[in-house]
Length: 261
Length: 367
Image 1: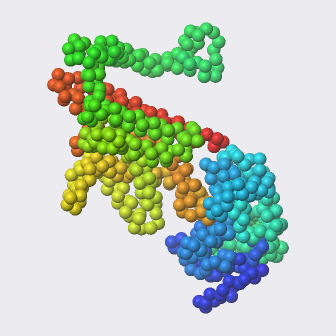
Image 2: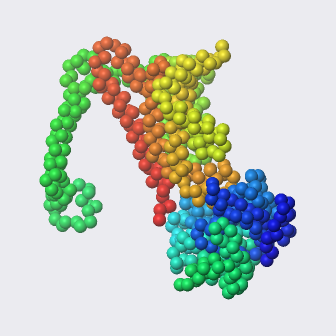
């Protein structure tokens, strides 16, 4: 549970060996809008982190900087020991090890479920097609959707599509998985089937960063919960501490709003 | 009356009773629709019989000027008598089997390529077909080997010329247009600027200008002694022109693919070209099938403009035939009607194929 909060005077501390993600004084602006302010964060291998906060607080932007879907203007981001900057080689190297599950699934509509899963293993990992198919079927079984392998994404329900998206990420056998509001676009009755898969993954020791408002999920699996507001990390604590004894007023207000019903 | 079967509440009764019911519902409901129906019928009665009379009943097919002079209807004899000139232009008369064969060959390759949508086994054959087919067509047209006499391409003409110009045009303009569209979206300022300037300049001038530039001005820039064949220059002009239009069509398709698709490709560590080829373009191009085919139809008809730089395409050869004998000159309506019919046949087939392609590619993906 180390948090790099020590202010540094220009010198960059090298990422610790245990940490798979190290973010140092990272800042990002959209024009004049300061989306991320002095973010410091380190994540150890196998840690499960839930990030919550009101909309517009920068939580999605933060995890999107971790696989360079978003750039940043100052500070450093190390993922798996690799500095994520403008270097295209570094970016591709990080993306091989970090996969993302999106709010709107972003499956490829013109390919079958199986083709969605085997695409990256075949083209990025250069895996033979037969082996990629076996790998894909293995993960489809794990997300309990193997019977849909030859359908197109458009023929599946939202919950099924999101489970396919998770399986697609798993096929890259990533070291880290990022979840960007994975259940927000789902009908309520489908949230559970997706969360069940995520809980299983967490229990198997996958390093996970998850932006979500599913506080039950946070309580069950998170090692740390991060609360963000206005581009800053306001509070970061273990789930028990976070829910039972929040320190900042903004966190208390947020928790009272989302836990009230 | 097959519409009857599709209407949900089927009125029972004999066929004529149902027909009356259908007409009442669809043609005569209300005074305005009744008026429109009667007006349309009157218009067709006024229009169709004279056309049928002229084009079929009173027409003559006999290939003689005398027969035409006697006939009160269309003189298809003009087309009949000049068919080979119209089809093959000034290609040496004895050798005209060569462009005929080349044309059949070209059509075969085109049909084979288009059929790959229906028969996936043909997919692997597309590239070999073109790689082998184009040289064979070139040998047939030019000759000079295998005992075929050499025929300069300034003698080429008619339908084979039109088909060659447009199919080679499609084959090269398509990838070039694609590169321009990608260039226009590029994050690299130099590539973006070059693409935008190219597209806007070419779109901003008429094809005639491009063809003139290609045929008159371009040679002035070449060093002494270097000449590029006139046909090739026209072909390049057509390709450059069509590519600019296609680029804008493709850009529309690229912009219609949701951002999430690009992000999904990125997050799976696919490279730019892998993402484009495997994820983005298959979706973008499918979206723009109708406007793409629209551009091709447009280009196909625009090839007729090569006549202004002295090449006789299919429309040009019709003119040539009309001028071949002063006695034929007054039958220009028949000549142009024939040319129009052939153009329509080809363009309509393209449109039909486009609709079929869209339907075929959408199969299985519908919810």
